[in-house]
Each structure stands twice: as structure tokens, then as C-alpha cells.
Image (cartoon, rainbow, N blue to C red; front, side, top):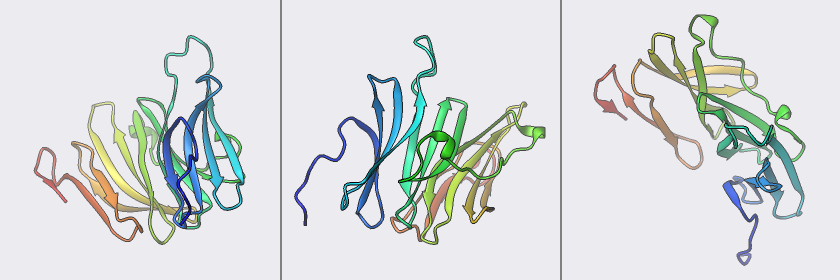
Length: 196
């Protein structure tokens, strides 16, 4: 076993690849004017930086954006993150950890919302299954204030609905470390008891 050592100072989020040979972290660089995602291969020393955002102006009131839920795919190459531009804009993006250079290199599933209820549609909590499918929550809010949520899996360009939740409080979910089982808790019906 290797001795402990500093991988990245000042990180606000981190994740270790499934094989334990690479790490990724979220850092704020250049005196807080740049948010970066940094991937490092601990065996070869190879490092790649993905620029997630640069501060648009000194007066920007939505700075810094949030980068949450950093998670590696089982292939030890791809990373998924939840990118929160503002409190009402959240997207799940997937990057090749060692070739992407900017947020524009991120891929996402096709837009899940139609114009009929696209008042607010957000993606949260990325996590990979052992099969390599990326799972995440999609939460929709209509103009009338009705909310609904769906847990989806995205793989090979296809999105599959795993679970749908009625209007009400958003669900929470997590999975085993190897992505072999998912648990979800949320209301069984609007304002009903929460179930797992």
C-alpha cells in the first residue's frame, strides 16, 4: 500500500475511480475566477484540467456555479457531474476525464422536458450502475407549481425511465458502491408517507 499524500489542495469535491488509480476534483483557480474539474492518474501522473466556468464579470451575482455529484463510470475514463449554473438551472454532464478541455466537451442526454411544462426542468444526483448506465433524477416544475420527478438511466444514447414519482416532495436516492442496487425514498402519493 502506498503512503498517504496530498492529491489536490483546495478541492471542493472529489471522487476516486473504481480501480483506485485515478482521482478527480473540483477546484476554484486563479483567485476564484475559474472553476475547474481536474482528473489525475495516480499511476502515470497524467493530469487533465476541464474548465467548467470562468467568472463573467466582477458584478456577477450567480458566481460561482456549483459542481456536485462527481462520479466515475465503471470504465475508469468517464466522469459525470451535476452542474448548477443557478439555483434553478441544473444539468448532468458526462466528460472523458483525460481528453475534455472545457464544459463544451460535456455530453448530456436529450432534453427531457417538452414545451408544455418546461417552466423548470432540472437534472440532479448522477451515479453509475455497475452496467455502465448513468442514473440521475429529473425534476419538473410546471407553471402551476406542480412538481414531479423521474429516476432515469442513460446508456448508449438511450434514456430509460426506472421510476416515476407523483407530484410532491422530490425523492432522494443512493446506491451501493458497486452500483448493483438502488434505494429510493419518496412519497408514495402526494402528501403521503415516504417509502423506501
